[in-house]
Image (cartoon, rainbow, N blue to C red; front, side):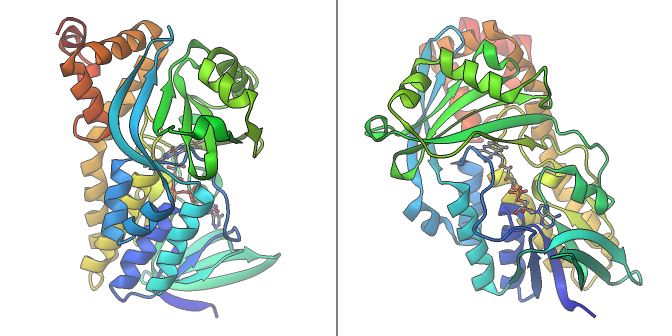
Length: 393
Ligand SMILES: Cc1cc2nc3c(=O)[nH]c(=O)nc-3n(C[C@H](O)[C@H](O)[C@H](O)COP(=O)(O)OP(=O)(O)OC[C@H]3O[C@@H](n4cnc5c(N)ncnc54)[C@H](O)[C@@H]3O)c2cc1C
């Protein structure tokens, strides 16, 4: 007979930890399970954008993150033809090894019981009221029971399929990154660099500065990785073409090998809820299409699921599932616009124009800054009228 909780959360990334902290603060008992031992690394660009700050504020953890993250105050866009523009954008970078440890500690200190080394294998509905969740722990079966289960296992399809929520196995994007230390370049470097390049057609490359003069450099593209779409080759071509990337590598020290991971984006491909079993974070595709940013939205969906359970705890599974599904549906239109705007990265002519005109006119600059700061949607990129204003304002 396994341990019993109000809520079992499978996956202790940003989504799972945000949900755990929110639920335990409302005095619900939480078992937070992860297959990994922490601190664990998660392949990521490590950039925290405004939606992440918003979620961290809500969780009461923003001060702790601010104390150890690396603040950046601008975003440099470099187009395929080499022109570039710097816009105002407040963000921060922090290796996921540290961020996820901080979030996990935030969940544990609020009262969640953390059980590492638990590889989720099955969820079984016992009697229409209680779920039994099973794990593989060093080859042995372990189980626990709860009224509610939150699945927060990230982009990989296997656990989502085991929970019965998977609709589409393939992920819509793939990205790779590497850490490189460069003391000289790190001096006064306080911007996020996004570079569009024909070698990364349908995506972009990035250089993000982090604490201790360590940069996170990588590329991401739409589609999956395979021999004709080889991430390592794209990455090497990207470095060979971007002077800033060459400078970083030339006198930099490689800290980690190149690592890749799929991204589940667009709030598609997974059912959001099945009775008292709710999917949160990247397992339901909460990472933004177009940009690939997802830490903030993962935390946000975790908080939304926790709030649905807190408010409707005494009610039926259907009531909780409906409340949560509604709050996810409210995010959908924005994700849909981001998805449609992905076409842009296949058109170097348009990204060149966007960068040039962001430098030249206040209208486009305002729109692009608003996009990053979540004040405007990329809708202006989808219409002829929007492009007319970009080009002729
Ligand atoms: C290369 C790359 C760069 C990115 N850059 C950025 C960026 O700069 N900014 C940004 O905001 N987003 C970025 N993202 C997206 C971001 O990484 C994700 O949106 C975010 O990690 C999703 O959080 P999550 O909690 O849903 O899932 P995860 O962070 O993936 O956490 C899932 C957890 O579930 C656990 N788990 C998995 N399977 C099991 C199982 N069977 N049993 C138990 N536990 C399990 C894992 O060990 C893990 O701890 C990037 C992604 C990639 C791949």
